Image (cartoon, rainbow, N blue to C red; front, top):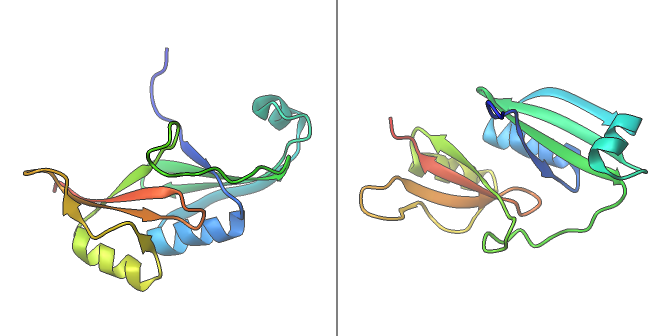
Length: 142
């Protein structure tokens, strides 16, 4: 029986660049980084030549795993949110509008300014990480 969430993960093209973004722009703390081509990682991934660089990042109690495949080399996918299988992570902000401006000033790309999807709903905006992965900024209900 599944009892709780462990972590969420994204495969990225450049681990150092992605760690810098999630740490310096969003505010994650780096928990651990490693490089592995162990027999276990080959079994877990199903790739007999698997060679990965991995970082685990923490934002409060939320754990994000970032993985760069050194082998086998992957290819970029279209991360458009309309594509089946595409995922995103939503983050709360204490003030969505000022956080939007702060992130824009740091060069973060947004799909649009914060807006409420419907009356009585929080204001949200989609933004992109360095690989074009969609992330969501949402007004905290508190």
